[in-house]
Image (cartoon, one colour):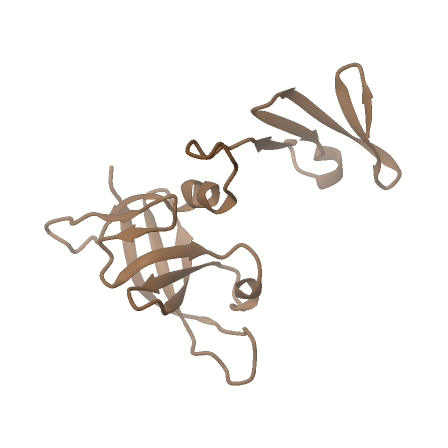
Length: 168
């Protein structure tokens, strides 16, 4: 890396071209990469801290951005709340106590279809995979086909298992 007039450059980062890294403060930085990615905007990275330990916890930040919040089943007249917490805990979703959004590892190859994957953990410690699609006011959870013996992954999305609606 080379520093020049308050800017940082990653030399020869892409096809013998330098990549500019703007570090305005410690809360975020901008990677001037739109020419490289072909996107209209540059990549912005936020520094997220865990307030209890003052350290970054990726899974909590991911949960917060993707699914944390209060939900309910549409057909529930009492609108009993289902809560997904940043720390991966669940309250109010039957036998499920925890969840984990798949972002890498073996689970990333579990499904053939292009869909987000989440594991919902039961009270007894076992878990079930679901595909999920999030809209602005709801999350649809989809069943997966059964595992194929002696084959890792290659499961398909089958039916809609349930839908949760975001509480306002």
